[in-house]
Amino acid sequence: MANREENIKKINDELELMSDEELDQVAGGSWKSTAGDTRFLNDLAGLCDRFGATAGFFKYGTVADEACKGWSKVGIQVSPVWFGENQYYLKGKSITREQAMEYAIKKFGKTWKDMPEGKGY
Image 1 (cartoon, helix red, strand yellow):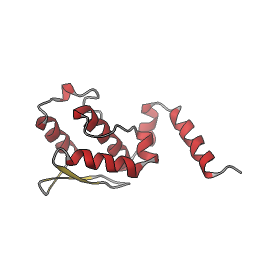
Image 2 (image 1 turned 180 degrees about the vertical axis):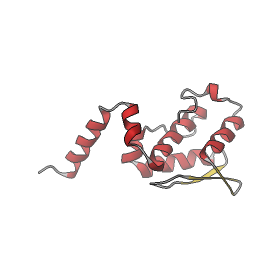
Image 3 (image 1 turned 90 degrees about the vertical axis):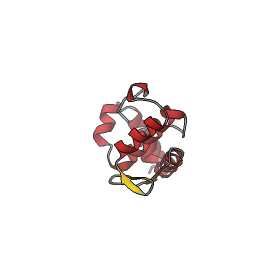
Image 4 (image 1 turned 90 degrees about the horizontal axis):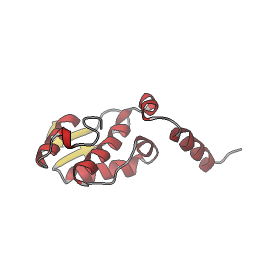
């Protein structure tokens, strides 16, 4: 019988064989958005480490912590939610993820054209 570590390795190996499009079909909830936030913030100004969707799923706490720290450097607070939508706040007011990204891009004097993944985060 396989132990926990062997099972996790098998799942990771199978996920690595999947394309981003295939991962999108199984990805959901905020862990995928949170991983996207780390990529966005890293591309924007190196504000945090960069994680992919697989890491977002298996290391959610680490990825969420990195994303929250990165967003705080922009002036945005985030309350991560495992399943559902993360909650973003600017000066205490609730905003959408898209509004948070727009705010961050403008704050750094950039446009979506400057971002490697465009709006695909």
